[in-house]
Amino acid sequence: MAKIKTKKKEVLDPEAAVSLWVQVQEYVQENMRQLGAIALIVAVVAGGITIWQVTKSRSEREAVSQFNEAMNIMTQRAGKGAEAEASYAQALEKFKAITEKHSGTPSGAEALLYAGNCCYNLKKYDEAITWYKKFLDEAGSSLSYMKPFAYEGLGYACEGKGAYKEALEYFEKQQSAGPADAGSMVLLNLARCYELENNREKACSLYREFMEKQPASSFKDLAQTKVESLCGKK
Image (cartoon, rainbow, N blue to C red; front, side, top):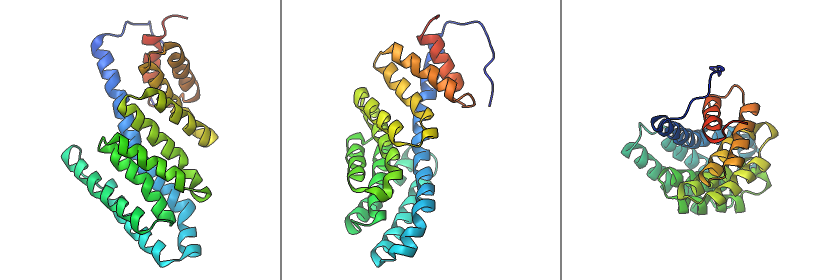
């Protein structure tokens, strides 16, 4: 990772500000794209053995097979734009079918989360929120390790709607529910939403905290620029 060099503070020009905002949006989209793959790995490691060796019900085996098909469609989409949109829409229908046919199974519950991810990427934010909330209601203790992903999705969906106060609430829940070493990236989400709410003081504090806790992050330069443009001299 590139280290930040000490330099004189410069005024952020409009073009740089636009570029900065594009970086933020790309971070949000990339994080959401990675969410599905990351959560799937966690699910396979933590829940796969239990699903196949302990449950062994026909319904669950069918649900797992259909779930994997839907995940392949969602994660192996080509490019962006119309192709990606078509893949998300196709995957969404498969996840919906799993939730209806295999309700009560672990895969049926997980499908609720990924239906939310698909809706988010299709910019159907209200539907995404509904699916994420359904997942939280049905996840239970066996899928509690995936709840931070649902809170993160809720935060992004609310942010997409411009409901920054609600987004902050869900990002804070993600921070509380997640592992102790995974909360630092949430700081960037919180800082961004406070900035969008015009709460500069809180945003500055969180950007600085992010820089302290994530010194090797590729987003440290972004946070540094935010501090310089928002916070002024201290």
